[in-house]
Image (cartoon, rainbow, N blue to C red; front, side):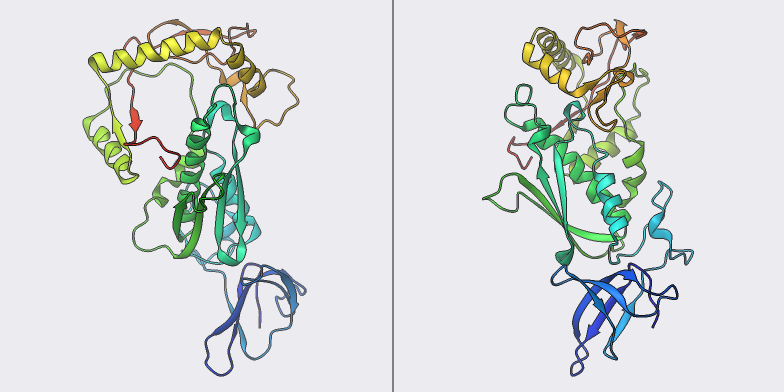
Length: 334
């Protein structure tokens, strides 16, 4: 018997041939992959030293399309979808890393993830350390940010080759448990949302001027369809509707600049040169974007009105193109 870390050890019932117990091999004691093994059992989550008997066999880590057993460690945008398989610590960590590449208000990252190995379930919890009590008193933006992280997780899980069942607010008595994502089996023929995986690492927030080139109608239709599959509505305002949205955004930014509470939130989550906080948290000065010289594009100034040495100015769009996502209701689920 030979195994690798990440392979599954299956112990069968000697009388029925059915699976009696299974677990993931998380440690080897011999370089050639022979027993004994450190096994994390799926029913308890405990790791024990196992000398497999005649009723045990190895279910190997699934091969990629090139037969490369090390494919699990390479998770670049060009990677190919793989069959569902037991998740190693490295893969679980990579999935959560993909999830946390999501956007959130002020990049506060108001989420925590927990993986329950014996049920193959990820739990997404709200992390109130990333809450903004003044700017987001009802935690609406926190829920939106966590929803973006949930979408990233769903995409990454599908890319890893798994079908998953997602439940929103699965425990009525625990409102900070926002969602669970349970891996239910290998991915079927339908690969959506796996095809979105390259966007997980490519996505970023830009505060620079955009082009005013018209968005082709076919692209708009495809985006509307994609939004509809997530049970939200996407629209492209124009005329008086567009002007109303622009006016609201400009008024909101003007209020922010004279609001001491909003200024305190900015100070907490923006980072200047020499700031000792982790580079993954908050909004750094280089991401503030230029100051607006001309144009009507609604821009949030993350400098909060303070001077940033060397910050350039730019002309923004005279005719901004906006897209609006909306839901029929405005509860935490939405």
